Image (cartoon, rainbow, N blue to C red):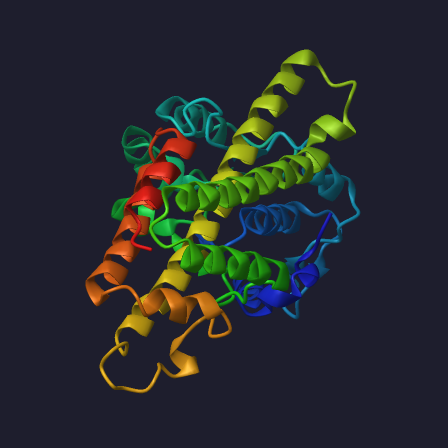
Length: 349
């Protein structure tokens, strides 16, 4: 359980929300965007608790600005037992949010609240709404039922339809560019050195693929363990079979969505390194001084200079395009290992 005070790294954007609460000017539809889907879910749940808290922290105007994190309503929302809080997640098989899911949500929103003062609907990974679902949701976003708040969560807001974006007040919880953790930098260092040393060897490409797949498998395992531990399945073993089945489907969808996000982040790190390689090629053989360290995101990686010294500018630029294409391909239902294999075989090394 968490309150707004428990998000110190997001203080500025949380204060914006709290000012809206204090002035009674909360928007009817929000888009929370950021790098961490789990954090976005936690903020959305905290907003739902604050709106329905029985003993809230109040601002100078007497309006609730934070939840107590302890009352019956706060506990119900935290444990997934509040009937007036609705969560929509991508379906596990299609990894998409369908029109049937949103029609069911709209029907629920149009019913009177059963326990809470405000009905709250949270659409997780909203960028996974297919076009029919998004179009069906437009009217509700524009004119939601009274005393209801809609919250869309996305780590890839650029994939949302413009018509959806225009109907939501967007709050960015990204917190600026993230510094790569030491363990991730060490992994990238090893991969870059391997890539620079292998040159055109086919065996070397498959070694790179093995390193990448091992990293992705570790990410998937950690994601499964983390989200499973927080699932209501672990807290309510005696729940009805129908409810457990729904939780299992939601957990499967949440694991898939979070894994895909982290996979995209990992490939984005590779792309940032390949950008360094491209910058290196701009001075190679020209008599110019090496690129300023401020221009390179990972100046400490020796493989950057080694690889940049043997690639042409065109080849280095094409590497960036290849990785972009691979990312786009992975947003489809293509087999992951095949897409990554094709991408790595195309790279100029």
